[in-house]
Image (tube, rainbow, N blue to C red):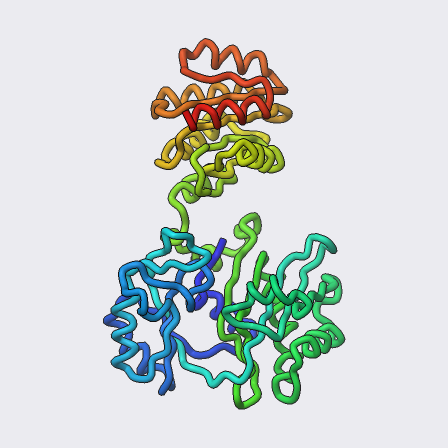
Length: 397
């Protein structure tokens, strides 16, 4: 689960991280009062969407030379005018795709005198099975280019979960970021704070870009992006309250109600598969034969008829879907349960696109019998390769 920047900063502030003062607003009428409550005379007006690249983003409804999704304001009038321009409009960034995201809230923040911009993140490094810091002296909006063109400027430091961030670890991070004086003192305190927040709140990603050294020599968390492990949210009702469903795909929200692993994609072939590995293989082979998957959908090993029916409804609710591939290898998951769910869903919502079904494993013959006797217009497949070729051919006509 993702949260907004201002929410992430509030969480980090509880742990003692240095963040600027700021106020979240939901209408332009709140902008002036929010700015007046902050020190000024420089304010930053920030679009709050679940995507990066806001500073370089463009609003669909505004002219090409209009400012992006993060703007400096040097007066109360500028704060208000920027808020009026940004709220309710669609911001397109590298991470939103062409559709963009509607800006429903802004964060008015006190400005900062920036001396240096640094990059810092914490994530789970699966190669060593530990949380790891990833830091660079080259922070800011072009960090992706740094990673691609000069990867040697990025330093990774795994942290022992038994000790947490030791003084030696903090010193290595300070050295990697070339921190001296007051900034180094702040870093020695900040890095353990961020790691503690990451672990205690079950974060899957904590990104600070940029982490800045101000002209007075102090460190400040200027931006913050946080994602949480969805499997651990039951432990954090306070974090669950921060969820903004307007930033999520409607189909993904519906899938979460049935505990389905669903991610919407940009293709036109809907996929219903059991097992994450098989789902990835299914999407890969669809691409191999020249088409694009419309979703990742893993119904899991113990799906019920109701769960499968819900999954099928979610797939067919996507107007981009031009064909559906059901690919089930029954181990714990029984093929007859999948077949019953598909039949029930089709009878309820109808079938307007080609449907290819490949079943193998537990109760496979019963599953095939259920589908064959259903009267549905289903294309049967012998194996995954056959299934992929058939659905791509059906979709492409």
